[in-house]
Length: 396
Image (cartoon, rainbow, N blue to C red; front, side, top):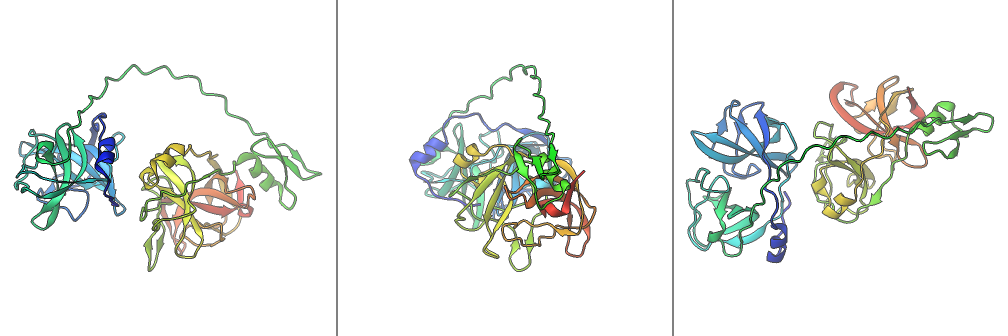
């Protein structure tokens, strides 16, 4: 988790009144190991709780590539909030993301720390001494969510703002009552791309209704030109969070590249020349520099990896999601700019894939989804996305 110290003025802006994070109903799919904060550096005094524990999810946060849920539950009749790995939890609705920025503060007396924002929650065994430096992440009412040192370990707890020198209360705005769901409007009729051919002159109509000269290609390629959009992007420089894990598709369920010697794919420090292609399933597709070979790679990151400004600018992706099949042995890649043919996503002749879009106006590469295949040809259940040469692909 990348943290930075920000001024008190900025803290107050961040902590303006807003609706409290709504709890999302959830259940455990295995025993629940708990930490007081989102990472293995935090205390784990609550131990492991049975999978039958009733929980709800308050928020989520990513630490060094691992997503942690802050969950609320009762144990021995007392109410707690603690953190556990996302993989242990099945959440049944959207989960809010926590801020990963903090402000520095200091206690002005010996204060109690609680497992939640209020005295209704269990009290932590150890008080926080006067003059203890703390990191304040957010405030709910009179309670600040703080990190601090406890017996040589990091701990996270809620401290009343009266015990802090610079942090003020933030009134909690009640969640508004839901309004009646409006009746859905009729969906617009989808555009039909006829893809008319002039075979004598090697002319076809592309996805956007424009004339396209497909000389040097066959009619299968011309048909794809009429069915697949071209990926659009905008320059998102700067504001890419370093060491954010990059997945091949818009979910943690997609395959993630692994390089022997350098580990799993992630964004570098102060990446330049960032391109942002669009969002899907709450994730954002980017092209980012590859430290491994001096080229670029394409992948998906959580929205918090880029600036809020760039998040707001990012449109939904324009993909076709058409069934297709490979016509020869081809290798998929996440680095089509350098035509690097690797990535553990090899596919062979007559393999079904989903064609999404052309990379650019050259129409040499098609962005596709398929199942992951390792370097030995072993096929897995993991989904993956990458670029396949258009010359080796056919729309069904």
